[in-house]
Amino acid sequence: MLPDGLSDEGTMPMSEALVVSRGNARLVGERWLGSGPTVVLLHAGVTDRRSWQAVAAGLDGVATVVSYDRRSFGETAPSSTESFSHVDDLLAVLDEVTDGPAWLVGSSAGGGVALDAAIAAPERLAGLMLFAPAISGAPEPELDPDTARFDCLLDKAIEAGDWDEQNRLEAWL
Image (cartoon, rainbow, N blue to C red):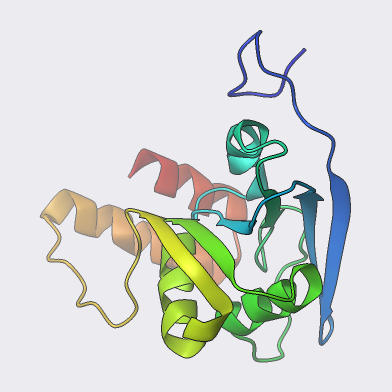
């Protein structure tokens, strides 16, 4: 049985485990070695690194592909009380996987992390590929009454630490 997103013609290339320690956090990911540039795939805020498996398969051998779970996603443990920055975490991953600039591919919240990294450390990047990126500092959109009601429920789920309810509401929204 093939992973979701792969056709019968596609196969999943072999990856190696990647763990990057940051303070008391362990960022868990994987790397597919290839002959070309390093490409780091940054997942959206409603998923984890698994959302990039078909992309990694498509880049098999063409690039060294890296995907990791940001804090509180996938196999990376929930955030601790220590302060952190997703950009600093990304730069630590880059330190681990490449000596040169890397391409960043980001979706939604992952795109926001990529944009922030481009501002903070442009010399570390070869380029960006963004899909509906979140933008730090952008004004909040005006919400219609129904969406505002769900936004309130989402805030309550986040405050309660109810990840299942948060994911359910975000998927519905």
